Image (tube, rainbow, N blue to C red):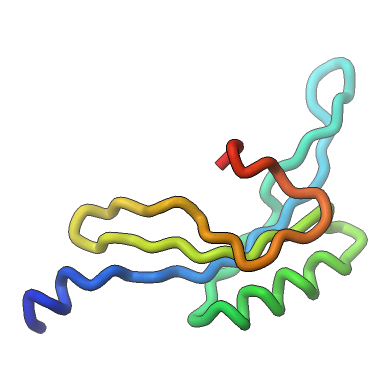
Length: 93
């Protein structure tokens, strides 16, 4: 393996679902992460998010990509491919 290979950025394609839950005494509804799936390309992540969003148990789904520096472990902000249904605001990430 060369130094160039070591420095290459790794891209992750994620499908993440959300479910509604009630919190606290007032029973105010919120969202929590339901499932997460990792794929090798953007189309697979987006297709899974579209399928998951159709489920009655799913409040919403995101498909996004993130870049990781394998040397430092730092991960960049999500780049959304699709956001479906009830999903958290971007600032919540």
